[in-house]
Image (tube, rainbow, N blue to C red; front, side):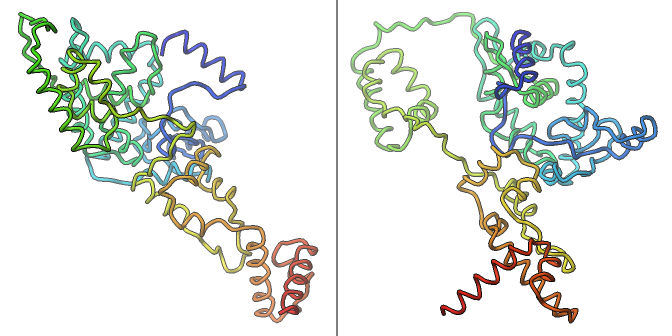
Length: 399
């Protein structure tokens, strides 16, 4: 980002009065709490030299699951990073190599990013590889997106980074941010992916003719215009559900011709623009993310010699290590599955489970079953136990 934006972001972080305007990924694709991840080798060195454990910079880098210094996987030492650890699974050799290279490049950027000016270097590589024409300032979007997706087709060990890299418009979104004149911020993860791709890319060469034919509207005859209009009508009738943006993408050449030569007619024959209702619609979660959440949130009854654990929405969020905003997005997602409702228990359900467990344990040990003994075993207040048993006794009496 530009120096002005960097100073503004630093001031927002120090003041803590509002949410910083830094680039972010959507929902559960964002890498969040990484405090609980440690490299065993770095941890041993820190204890030997400083006498205590410490969280290093490279351990906080997003989507990095292997130490770029010692090449060993990170270890989960605190449950706040449970979700971060579960998103990283051992994959094929190519995916593991991609993850190692990404971690090394992210570590280099974190240490030397300002001095290397990686942003300007990436724009220069776009030109050198033939994807960006400096004279016309045109970008070969289709070829760039195709080559970019092929580069990362084997994925990474972190399923979230795989989802980000394989996005159809990821490369286009990166270049759009890089070329903005106001110096818009670019997510460092995207910058690492693009810079890495361009350094290893073979490039793209396009034959450019010296003579450029200038388009002249006055030479377009009415018969040609009518033929183009009819082609557009046929396409609209065959695809009535497409939005303006989708029509533009699928019939780019026809749309461009009409825009240049018959723009007034084109505007009258476009679908109505989509109007936002003020609330962003939730998107379906990728299958890889759902698989991770399903493994993390499977309801567990706990050990038989301990009372049933608390299973509130707060406890579930703490176990996953997710922020409140992201957890609320997860609960409102259309991809939410039954495991979340099965995992969360109300206070009444928790009291019922603990009292029933305590009674079974007291009877098994042949001890006296009373309100005091139940409260002691179930780790509940005596008044809570007494109120619960009285309410159930009254309910049974009425029946």
